[in-house]
Length: 353
Image 1 (cartoon, rainbow, N blue to C red):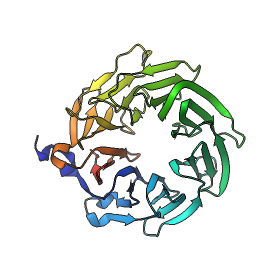
Image 2: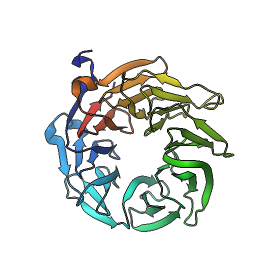
Image 3: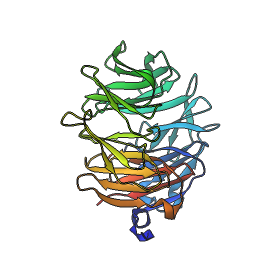
């Protein structure tokens, strides 16, 4: 396969950013992407000029490394948490500024627009706590306590509940009032690492230390076990209609069916990957239910049409030699894609028709 067969060459751009890329995210208005490295660099890229290295603006928002990244409170800003126990606000064209001092390392952070107040909420994890702020950190809304460290958490699609993964299970919290109580607790022995909520709030799924996936039906707590992986599953993604769950963890891209009674009693589909290289990241398209992007440990990124199993290479790692794919994100329109690697490369690809 020649280099001209890759979308990165005809419709994309990539460059070295120095340092393990921990995450990338699109701005609220989809006009910018941001890329964060473990070494502490934050890159903000103009999507209209991404092919010019000069449009990649570099910031150092922390006195040390960056732990996590999320969207900021307006169209061209981003929030980061650092190992200096600070939350930093970075807006394009301005200097980064600290907005909150935390009591420990913030491993995960999410922002979302509150439709009722038209202001931004922030949730962040510190040890055994999830802390929720309203009005762009102006109001402390909730502190959610857990018996063990929160390994991961996520919002549901409706943005009215938080789900947390921790030792021996998962917890679901509703965000309706300041006196919110645990909506439900889901138990299964072992360490639960990543978590995802079904788009229609039917199921919670976690990845586990023992290479399995575990799920619970939210309505009655019915257990679901999905196994057969070579390594720990570090990436999960539901299709927008909730029919398919894509996962990393093997050389192939694993698709579990969440329809017709699945996934229990069903054999997962396996999309072909890169021989002798593990799938490291998966991301469904935010608009088209049947399109899926997967990254691999050799640096390859493939676009799959799961209905007809067609494959379009975005990056071929054996030619680019950029390192294992550590993150992939679409913007909310699905017309731009950003990615990062463990060896310190990042790229953007125009995915519009």
